[in-house]
Image (cartoon, rainbow, N blue to C red; front, side):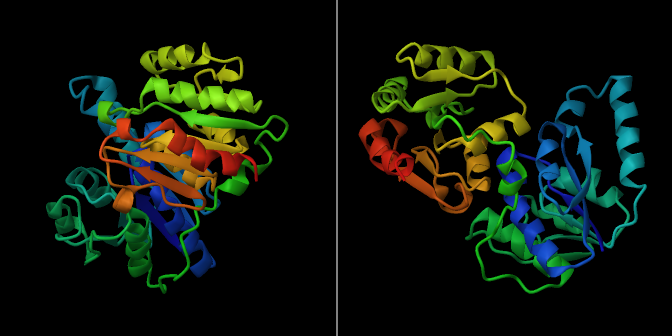
Length: 319
């Protein structure tokens, strides 16, 4: 059975789709999955063994450059690749008008998606052959799993969703140095944790001879990482990395501390013990989903203290 998954962004949303692929793979013996995803996240589907082909799309970049000839050439090349296959099912797990019109409608095969009350943008349901009522009041991972089960006609598993990507990194991850990843970077200002609190965590880990590794994605994040690295000799600021390299670093960590960001979902997908700080968002529906995920919640990020983090983190390191 050939299936096309349309889930283009964001990082967390793309990762949340992986357990549905595991369900499909367990239920359908001759499964082959292609996946349309934003170019920045094209590495993620390749980590799952059910995926045959990744078809990158660049809607975010194209809409900023509509007047450039290169944009339209890329668009035509994308359509040519998309339409080169006949699919038994095209599942739009994005639920947006842009994904329905620009991708799902263009593909060859029966289209499935959320109904008007379940989709993020109800009008997207007009472009599906079959649509399903899947209420919002459940985690995003479960919604996508149920959408795929209904679309392909298999029984929805009662077990917790399994990303099935940890084994992809098992041989690549480092086993020699015990270290903790601190994921300090996020896009929203109200999701940031005080640098002074990060410093206190780093200094406590230094007392226990635990190495700390800091990743970054832009100049502002790099400068913050470098400031944090000054406070103790146990800190390593990593070079700029792609998603596969970052996943390898996270997979090799003893544990992770993270703010609410895409990489916290990556840590969850890798079944890595993770203390996640939620002060600006509610993790109930879109929090990190996986094994060994510890939520620390407050009304504001500044009200989560370093002592609370260390209380949760240190037992994870010492197990």
